[in-house]
Image 1: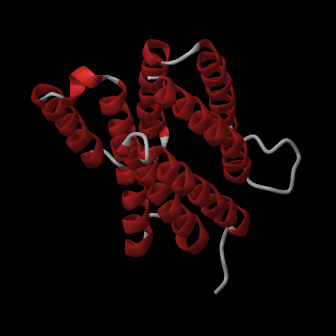
Image 2: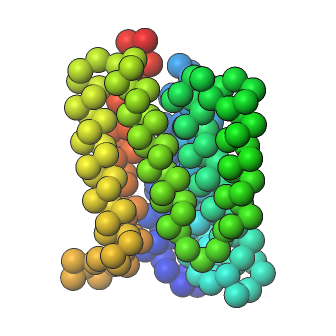
Image 3: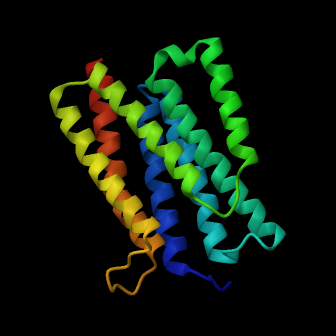
Length: 194
């Protein structure tokens, strides 16, 4: 099997493994939030195969892989949003988020922008959760996570490679690895303190 973008494929697989580990560890304290990590891991896994085998939505298998990637990416965002703001866990909030998720899934295309905006909202909601329930050290770790995450988004969206022999997507993934570790630490500390 020849991979079209082997560096992106392998960095995505590494990121998916890390997200699965974080999901498994967090789910012992908060099952639904662990599910957010699992959904993000599945998104990353399907994204790896999309970049590795097709890297285009002009063929049906590529379109299916990209759609699965984006649907699971959006699902992870909605899971994080709903668990970070408990009022949304009541029936009206669940129905609103489900409706927004349905709109999100019908607007999927080549663009990753809407998913990034949605993930940004999820990150802000997680910040609210940490601020409301956490301790001071959790907040500092959260702020470092946000800085690293927004830097990685800048790299991905501006297609920066810094002269390295890797694609901007690979660099995005590699920057996300320590960010996910910080997010896990922050949530673990907050959930333990709560």
